[in-house]
Image 1 (cartoon, rainbow, N blue to C red):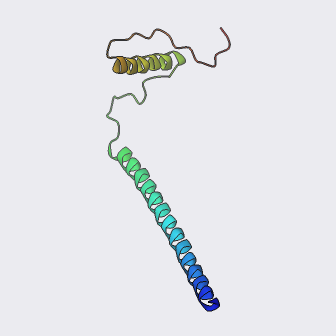
Image 2: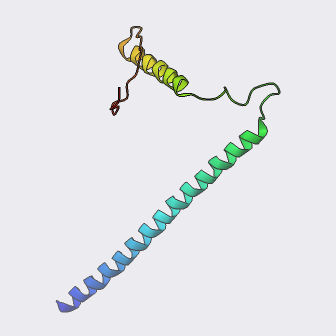
Length: 103
């Protein structure tokens, strides 16, 4: 009886070691795959930027961004989302931030 318990303990220890090794190797494989995927995405973005330069005469930016233009874009996005959700045209006139304490 004592011999079989010792044999079972040794077998369980071996299996535990194999399980931990398998888990570590699996995590390393997944981590490596994710890192390689990130590198490929970065390289593809750089390649795309180099491959398609802006056309001559095209402004690099739309101009300086202002708080007013950002608010107008936000209102347009909210109105589009509300229209899609409700199914009827919606007009959003103003947006007030929730944390605003001054008037």
